Amino acid sequence: MATSAPAQTVVGAATGTHVRPVMLLTLNTPLDPAAVSFAIETALETGAELLVCDAVPLAVGQPTSSAVRTFGDREALDGCTSAAAEARARGARVSEMLFHHPRPLTAAARVCSEHGVGLLVFGADRRRLGRWRFRMAVRRLRRDVTCLVWLNE
Image 1 (cartoon, rainbow, N blue to C red):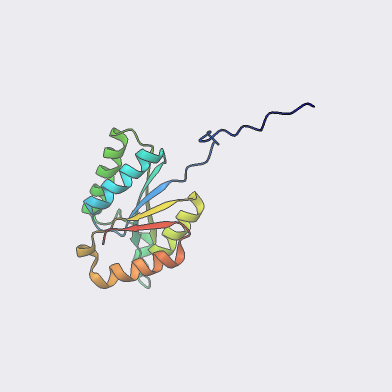
Image 2: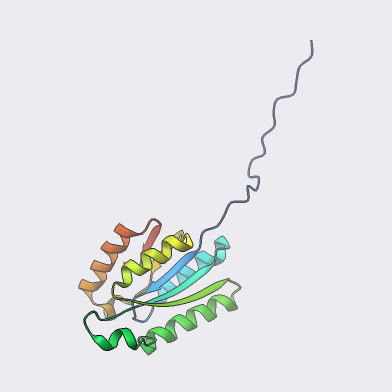
């Protein structure tokens, strides 16, 4: 009587899974240092691309706001640039995005969806953003995005 060997399974075999990007987001305010560290470390540990995003709100109802688009707050732009430079220096793949929209959180949710973001690190400095705006932003992000959301609370 012939017996066959039991099927062998390989534990921990590479399956070629796709690693989803990590997004570091601010709303035209400087980045929180703890959020920057967490986003960079996560991107490095997982081998994911890091998207450093600054969502600049456009004022609705002002005719000049649609014609003149600025880079937003200088301190916020410098913070995003330095976070991206630090991540690149440590070996991460980085993309920087600056987008203008009357509803910046809606635009951020759309960017998350289009890029298949796996983790959104909300890195806006809560003191500069203000308690009410920070809470409102957190509620909207948790409601609108389909990925994990990290907050420095």
